[in-house]
Length: 72
Image (cartoon, rainbow, N blue to C red; front, side, top):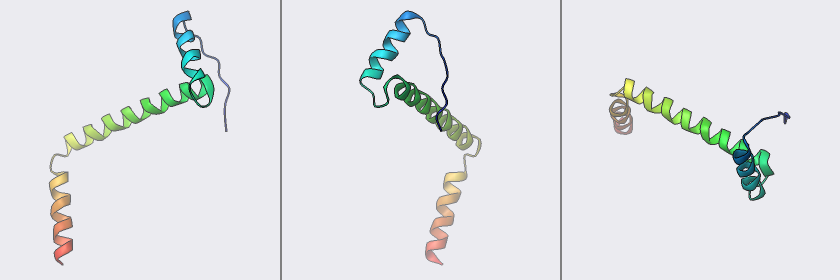
């Protein structure tokens, strides 16, 4: 379900959004949606990286478990 919103940009940003929207499927809305999705992905990757940094033994433990399961 799509929701209509209004955004305000300075002139140069609005020009850029229109310009990129001309080359993007979905126009300016499609372009802005793609930027938001890319931002969401970056945030998820940072969170993923923080989790692995907080759990440094996880990868090795997972590999050990997989090796043990394949020999069982």
